[in-house]
Structure formats: structure tokens, C-alpha cells
Length: 125
Length: 125
DNA sequence: CCCGCGCGGTCTATTTAGTAGACCGGCTCT
DNA sequence: AGAGCCGGTCTACTAAATAGACCGCGCGGG
Image 1 (cartoon, each protein chain N blue to C red):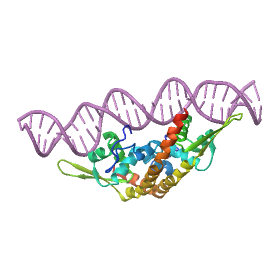
Image 2: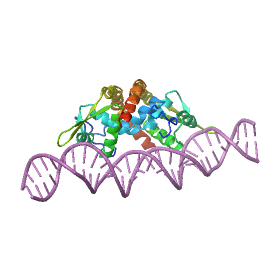
Image 3: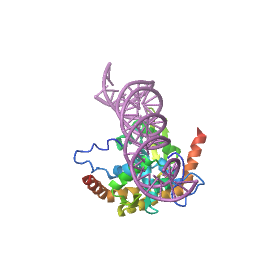
Image 4: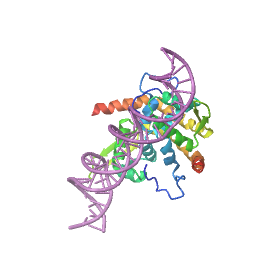
């Protein structure tokens, strides 16, 4: 996804193709997983790390930063000691859960079929 | 996405998580784009390349191979001269179009909001 | 008092994934 | 004859993701 359509200067945030645009974000597995994890409620940084399980700090940090930039996630810093940082879905972020759930439902429903197909093709080799 | 681990509260340790599994395949941008392109009908290899626009031969080849293994795409070789190879969605592949359309609809609907959020966050920096 | 842990990250080095581009033989079109 | 399409594979390079160290601060236990 290097050069979708060669962005014009001044156009840097207006990607012409919405599909490409959404893919750049959620097509990335980590963003998808982070959003799915945040679906169950507001969480802190290390809490997210634990809940996702196998994401590196750096990737989580970068992913959250992008999701915040895109207005899907809100980051709240509490000026306490020790500092507390909470992440939660914005209304825009929550609106994304609907098509996301559709995808997850498809995965649940057809996972076995995919596995079967995979086994079958492996047997042919 | 190395180890299929925790996902969210109430996760199953049992089998590989379907969500991870589906993300490994279609969460990859190229797979998603290829399926979306094939939605408009049977196409040949170079035809797909042209229609997608900015995918490398290698990636298209690899992506199609995986989609075929997973039973989402059927590859048909016609023993002609010159050889003709056609790719089309299987019923399983077509079933995926439904949640995919949901995602694309979300993208269309909220693309502007995402762009606005991006601009806003840029201005704050 | 000192040790190690948790917090929310960043920085660096290494591994891995994706890219462009050459190449293949056989064919058609000009 | 030369160029170009067909469906790919192979190689060399570059971009991205990973693991792991590190940071200052506070807290609880020994």
C-alpha cells in the first residue's frame, strides 16, 4: 500500500479511496484487535497489553496513537501519581464495532470451513 | 501474531482463535483488496493486477495462493495456448462479501470524520 | 534503607515481510 | 524482426515489526 494514488501536496489527509483508507487502518491486524479489546470497556495501557497478550509495547503505542489521531479512540491522562492513562472508544470508534462484529461473526461461522479447505489443499500437495 | 493467546475477557484457550485466524488471512490488506476486486467477477492474473493497480506480481501470486488454500478463491487453468488462468470466488468467498460490504460501507460513511479527526490532531501538534 | 515491581512509554538492534525489477518460453500483432 | 502479453518465479533491496533494554517515579516488603 505504498502509493495508493500518489497523494497531492495539501491532500495529505484526504486519501481519495475510502476503502484503501480504512484498510490502512483497520486492515492492520493490531488496530482491529485493539478496537475489539476496547469494545469491552475503558482500559489502561498495560491492561490492554495483558488483554491482547502478544502485542509489543511499541506496536500498541503506535497503534493507539494512530487510532487516537483518527478519532476512534480517546486517550485520557490523569495527573495523578503514579500517572494513569486510560483509553476508550469514541462514538466514532463504537460505530466501527458494528461492521467489525459482522466480520467476527463471519469468522466464527466459517472458520471450520476455512480449516477444512486448508487441510484438503495440504493433502493434495 | 505469533502465538494465539488471550483475546478478550472470556476467551477460549481451546482451538486457534477464529478472529486471529481470519485476521491473519483477510485482515491482510491485499487479501481484502483481491476479494473485493474479484467481487465484480471472474478475472485473470494480469487483469487482477491492472484492476488493483499497485500490487506486485509476487504479492498477488502469494495472496491468491493463500486464498485458494483457504477455499475462498478457485483457480482454473485452461490447457490452451497461450495458457489462460482464471480466478473466481467460491461460495465461501462470496459469503465473505457480506461482512466486507459492511466494512466498506462504514468506510464510505465515516471517511470524512476520520479525515477531519486527523486534521484536527495535526493542528494541535 | 534498599530491592524489585508496575506504570507508560521510548530507543535500538535484529529479524521478517514486502517491494521493484529482471527473467522465462511461447505466443500474437505490426 | 521487434515489441508486448501471458502467468508466474527468483533475487536483491528496503520498509516494517519484534524483542528487549532503558527511563524516572512511587509503592510495598524485608
